[in-house]
Image (cartoon, rainbow, N blue to C red; front, side, top):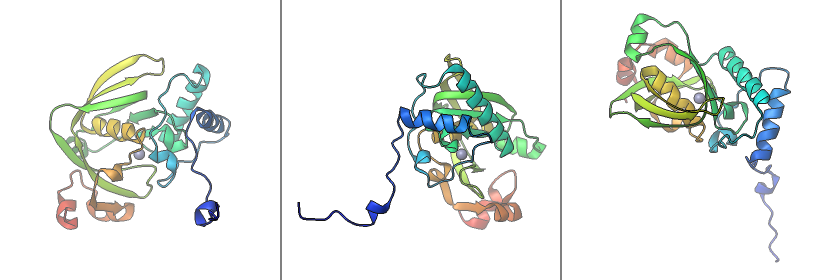
Length: 224
Ligand code: ZN
């Protein structure tokens, strides 16, 4: 073959293969890291691949440590959910917790009820009914930005818990939003894929103009 296969692509590192070998290494790196892991930002391919279903690749003791590290990382950020790909681990695992104090107006407008900590493996959600809700949301992997996402107002979630027990739970309001956002991460989807892009706001602009319980002012001011 005479043609030289040169070009800029040869200079780029290969895209990682997110297989069980990669998963094992990524988990070890987090467990042995000695500090809370960095949160991967948009642009890393681990956020854009369907994470591997959990089929027992990690033993029980390591799994408990991993869940504890993810909980710490989520609370330190702070956030209300963290998916394993966000710390570089291509595994269908996410932790969720929303115990933040919110104003009564905010809680009412967003149907925001406290969500006790739980870890979910291999989650799948389906909308319940046809009602939707549109609110600003952000992501620890898109630091400094938020945008409005219209999502089903209620979902049924099927997942495995940390003991491997299959569970089904219904979520409504803000809890349903968190469940969908974290489940989407495990399918390689970021909220910006579903967002109303004209609503996109930096944290500074959001705080300055649009930090209201509902999105009416942002709709009028940004034209969406
Ligand atoms: Zn996120």
